Image (cartoon, rainbow, N blue to C red; front, side, top):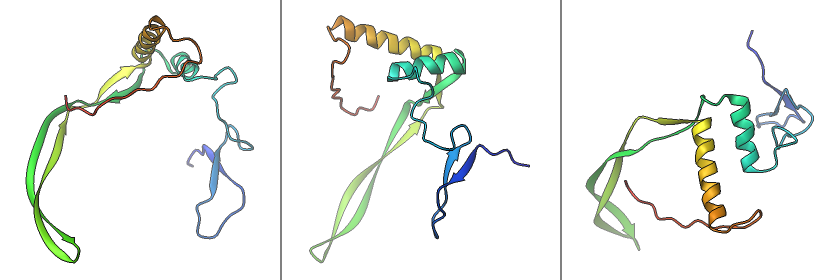
Length: 135
């Protein structure tokens, strides 16, 4: 027998998949794993504490190689066929590199310390602008 982690809730609507909720909270949506969790920082601390410091939390991949390929494409503009060359880029990616909860926690603390050194206070707002780069 298959173990169930969720149950159907609400009315059945013809042609739609039923709404499901976790067995942990079938009567209401949970928006926080604990009443003490109020911020993103709290989420990370909760995760480090409950999922094991050495356990993999997230991963990323590096671009190892960019392959460019030029192709001729046909477009219809104003009812006329137009041929133009287009460069397509394909990315050869590395295997996943995983960071543990502890490593991510350390990065978060470093970023927070840097923001405090710049003079940010609780409830300060920041905007991050960044270009996309291939490296």
